[in-house]
Amino acid sequence: MSQIYLEKSQQTVAAEPPTYKQYATGWGFRLGLLAALVSILIWASWLVSMRAGMTNSLTAFDLGILRFSPPALLLWPILWRARGQVKAVSPLLLLGIICGAGLPFFYLSATGLKYAPASHAGLLILGAYPFFVTLLAVLFYQEKVSPARKIGLSFVCAGVVVLMVLSLFTAPAGTWIGDLMLLGASVLWAIYTVSLRIAGLPPLVSTALMGLSSTVILLFMYATGMVSSGLADASWDMLAGQILVQSLLVGLLTGFTYGYAIHKLGAENMAAIGAFTPVLAALIAIPVLGEAITSYAIVGLVLVSVGVLIASGILKKRP
Image 1 (cartoon, rainbow, N blue to C red):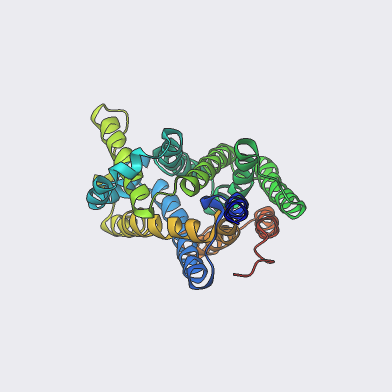
Image 2: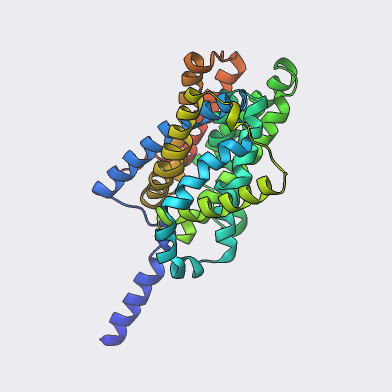
């Protein structure tokens, strides 16, 4: 009798998916959904804010120090208390978290936004990253891709190709350089998403880790003359807006909400919800930056948004 029970227990354990593939239900799912919605609102505001900062007197260093230093200072006690938990995580996953959403990602995004409009950034960074998330899952974790996801990701690829090809021939000179940088940032964000999900670190711990490592590198770059600052030439209105978005909303709040949503909903569901970010960013950029949405950008936005929704399968899921 005990042997039968043991065999059944072993079968149950074997049938259970890994922790990083177990999703919340009920109120946990609803709270995760709320956190995801807050994240995309902040992301859209962040893209517009970055574009405004990079087209004025602020440098990438200025935006980076505003983005990473507050979490580094405020969350340092949390990171110190969780140092044992951090040491237990694979160094490769920690590197994925630090680089995927830290300084390398930030510099690609900021520099890309210097050349390309906010509508391109939303589509190429947050619209395309579900494709790279799936690619990483297939290459490193042998995850099977469903027919629905293949169809959805085909839409995503089509949207990105439409945007980049038509932008190459019709957009102002240099836009394509920004587009390539933004696409590189999308790859890094996908690495961050997968690493964060598998590492299982609490959201505030991963945010503190990114903030501390990025701040140390930024200060070293400034001290050695590798970067310059334009903070002295920026207006108070510009600084106030950047502090609000970069330091408080992106640096602190979204570090928690995105991590929470990833843990509760999973990377695929979060990617589906994040597909609406490009649309929000493009709409916000119209009154704030005076940007006009081109016809090919609209086509790209529609293709990518539809593709991510199909690929994630969220339309068929019920908590």
